[in-house]
Image (cartoon, rainbow, N blue to C red):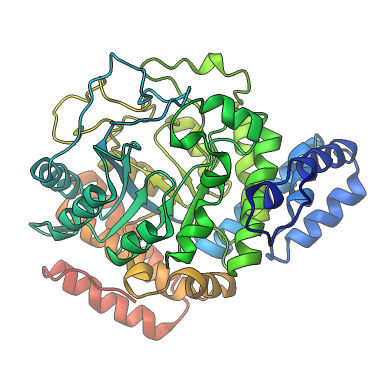
Length: 473
C-alpha cells in the first residue's frame, strides 16, 4: 500500500487515499471540538497557512459562531495579501476537438451533436482584437486534447499570434494556458513562449472516480495527469494553477486532496500553487449536472473558498462566470482575487454579436459585459485590476511568493492596479463607469503606503491621461 509522502513524486503517495480518509475521519470527529478549532484559528492568524488536516476540521465545523469567525478571518487574510484588488481575465477557447471521453464535458469524443471548431490564426486575431476592444489584458487559453488537431505547435503558434497583436491601445500582456497534461519537453516550449501560469484542473483527486469519469483517452491516466505540475515546474514554468471540479466527488475529499497537492508543490519545489480555481459542475450541451450527485450548495461553496484562503493564504483564488452574480458577490468577499468578465466559453465566441451556444463548454451564469462587471466591482468597493506587472518583471514563482508572503506586494500591486484601471477608464469604459472609477482612484491613491511610490503613481496617472500607456512598478 502506498505510504503518504508529500515529498514523493508519485501521485498516489503525495495524494494518498488512506491519508485523506483518515483526515476526513479526524475532521468529522473534531468538527465540534471548539478548543481544537480555536487553536487552529489562532495558528491561521499567523498567516502561514494550515495543513490539509487542520483546514479539514474548519471545513467540517458546524458551529455557526465559529463559521462566522472563519469567514471574517478569510476576508482579513485576503485583504492583507491582496488588498481590495480583483484581477480581471477572460478565457479564450481555441479548439474543441478532443480525444478524451470525460463524462462531464460536452467536448468529449462521443458527442456527435456539438459543432467541432478550431480557430485559424486569422480568426484568433479577430477574437483577440474583440477582447482588446473590451479592455482585457490577460487571457487564459483553453483547448481540448487532440494530438492531431491541437498539437503543441498549434498552441505555441496561437500564443505567438496573441502576443503579436497590438490594436489601438490594446495589448494582451499575459497569456495563461489551460491545456492537457503533457511532457517536460512541451512544458519547456510553453515556458519559452512566455506563458504566465500553467493551469490544469485535477477534476477529482479520488482515483477510482477519476478513472470512471475519464473512461477513454489519454486523460484516463490518473498518475500522468496528477503529476503534471511537477513536470511543468521541471520544464521551467514557475507559476502553476490547481483546481478541482466541485460536484464530481465528495467535496471534503476534494478539498483535502487539493490542499495536499499544494503542500506537495511547496515541499518539493519551494513554491505552492500560484492560483487555485474553484469551478462547479454546470449544465452544458449533453451534460446534466444532476447526474453527479455530489453537487454543492452556495453556502458550502463559500465555506470551501474561505477555508482555502485561510489554508493557502498566498495563493490567487479564481472564480469564473460559471457562477451567477449573487454567488460571485458572496464568494469574492471570502478570498477570491481573480474573476473573469464578459466571458464566452465557445470557440470563436467573442467575434459574434449574439452569444453562441452550440460550442459552449458550459453555461455562463454571469452574462454581464466586462464594463458592467468592472462597474459592479467598483460600486462594491473593489479595484478591478488589469495588471500583469509581476509576470513581466520576472516576479514569478518563489520571487512572487516571497514578496506576497512579506506583504511587500502592496507597494507595487496597489499602484499597478490603479494605473491599469486608469488605462481601462480612458480607453474602454462607459461614462458612468469612468465617473465611478475616477473617484475610486482618487480615494485609493491615499492607501499607497510609501510616499515616493504614491508620487510616481500620481505622475503616471497624469501621463496616462495624456495618452501614454503601460507603466508598472
